[in-house]
Image (cartoon, rainbow, N blue to C red; front, side):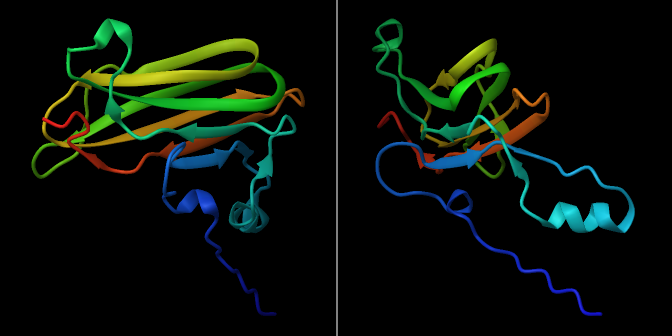
Length: 164
């Protein structure tokens, strides 16, 4: 018996061009099977959230928020949106910076955690430097079927978002 597994590239595997989210991902759930079948199940697409939840991340950019104008801060947003309210939604926004040869998290890590909501945003930010930045989002929702669904996203790499 020959088992053939095909891997495909989905739109969330490729950085998007233009305005709006640079990466978007559906919330999915692991298949819970044991043994050999559990390994095969992990190769299949994850079960999607019944509430149609999606996570998106926006590119790091110079802050235009009133409290931060003139302070040269870099911000980015991780947003989750569902078609209807879910019992629990939690996600984080981690800003990473590369000003030399390695990447590392920097600044404030944004956290969103609420119950019975349909959408929510977490924001990561830091003092802006002449460096490369990338935002990464991860999160989970507990959906109405009482199953846990996860998603991860990342922004494009942006150099010197504050124009320093």
